[in-house]
Length: 154
Image (tube, rainbow, N blue to C red):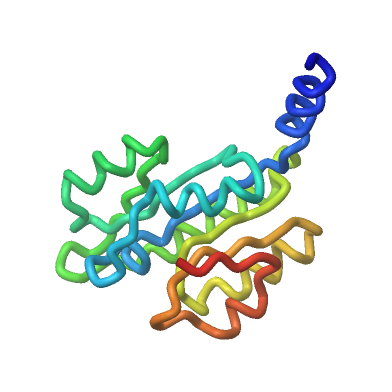
């Protein structure tokens, strides 16, 4: 019995650390009916989420921000011109590059459909770290799907 516990503990310790970023405006949409908890579980199959952030624009409802916090994610609100909808892509890329340069992080997981993140995935792989894409089929950029080491379609 003790031996089994020891092996289980060793397996948990050896799980890769993943930085997980959610492109909120692209993925958390009514038409996809996605549950943040389900998305999180898909990533946790591949490692331990050491960094978890959901990026939203300035129009995100307070209930959504609260739901994100309840799942243990940090909410990043990308601010921009109040007259226009703010694109969160730059904020996601900046935070992902910070995580990429963290020696404790073994992989980057990204929930998006956006081909704009292809260069990010290429840089992550260049640094020898794993790329995980969590997405939905409608509107998924094929180039991003092919660039990922692991693809989790919801």
